[in-house]
Image (cartoon, helix red, strand yellow):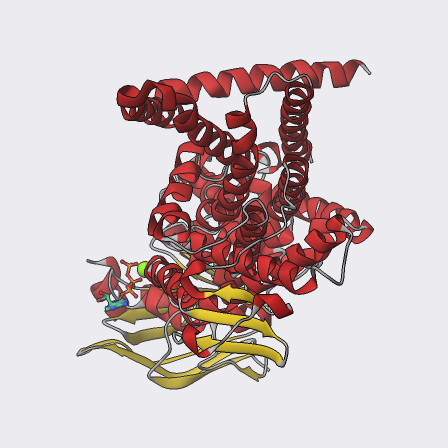
Length: 252
Length: 357
Ligand SMILES: Nc1ncnc2c1ncn2[C@@H]1O[C@H](COP(=O)(O)OP(=O)(O)OP(=O)(O)O)[C@@H](O)[C@H]1O
Ligand SMILES: [Mg+2]
């Protein structure tokens, strides 16, 4: 069974058909890339997969579970976590607290337990701290745990978003342009980290990226979107050598 | 972990300052060194501090503007005073009587917070400000036309038409709520000590709430709603939680307020729009998200106008100069940096001591 199977997904904004007849099938443990020119509809696909937008047509099945039309919160609980193209961190909170917020449903205690500081509070908070630090270490952010998220440099903010998404213990991780704004060294490092995340957490990853070096370096399969429609789909090397893709996207 | 310790240290400082203020004030009273004017505003200071703490939770941590917290205070005041009047003959222990009134007032304010929250907190955008503003005005007007009396043949309730109920005080009948005349002859159960205890309890609740899983969820919604949803946080639930607790604390302030007066009426000055704005001023001047700041601002801005009464003409002038300087002290970059430096040096000193031990 595929980890993600999307059929005939489509959405219209007023008269604009932003995404049309979108199909994709991602196997468990795959590193999958979604590429295409600006405005092609890539982020819109992510927004539909995560319930930010309700699709006008089509179906989304995650690991056998139909999640079409579900709310963002339910979809996260079902197993999809994401990052955002325009970074969305909890800016006024510390780096470690950002990850602990990601652990919200993984490690729970009630409001009253928190206010009364019952023994369970201490126990769960300790578990949260440990788990959060472990995740921060993966992204080499453990040294900045007590900084406010807004004071992190740009590249590290992107990494923190991934750490926070992973904290929700997803089956499928969606990354929207994770390398945007990073320098070549940071991008190189990010590629290693994404591979590590996939191997270490046995994660399935779908990522949007404009950086061709990253895409060809780590993605096993690709889907190319153009004007809201799938232009080409398949093994990374085949897709990138497809003349139509070169014309529509790379030759741009 | 380090972060946790730092915030609890900060809480301890706040508790310490409050305790010190309480002790000094009590000594001044006992030794006869506090004017009766000052003694008279100690309870109001506690009342406004409480309501400001509640509002700060809503504005500073949830990031939602409420312009009707005087309304929740009003609910707490009337429900609390009503309970006291009902139980007055039955329960003679004053502390117990006040505690029951407090519980009722707080629960009713929380309930109204919940009812106001149901339609509004699901919406995205700034609807809360408008709805709470209306709520504050409506609740005040309803109370002004509400008549409840304890008569020999049972309880009687009337809306608008108070004349329909005849009350003969000679045979032990009495008004519980008498329309615009409000609630009369409320036993004077509030005092400075009770006010301070309530502030301590409120701080205990909000400090611990903010520094817990639920508090982080509340602040996550404030910082970025879409991201909060994306990590599985139930937005409505946590908005509601913060708002209801906020209303409940304002209700506690109301109960304290009511038992400090012999006659409780709902007028535009005590529970109207102006009061809501005044509390908001305390919160903003004290610093959003700083409960200690809310208390300090409420205290200074309540004591000052009274203290300046003798200066008559210059009173408003001095008051506004003070408002502006507090604003500068809180928001001007230079002042903010200076405060940070002071706080850092205090923290350094204490943590160095900690290392040696
Ligand atoms: N909420 C919305 N309302 C109206 N139009 C929208 C909305 N969201 C997206 N669009 C439109 O849908 C199209 C696809 O946008 P989308 O953000 O998905 O592109 P993208 O492929 O992610 O581009 P980029 O590479 O620049 O991030 C654009 O024309 C955009 O203006
Ligand atoms: Mg995009």
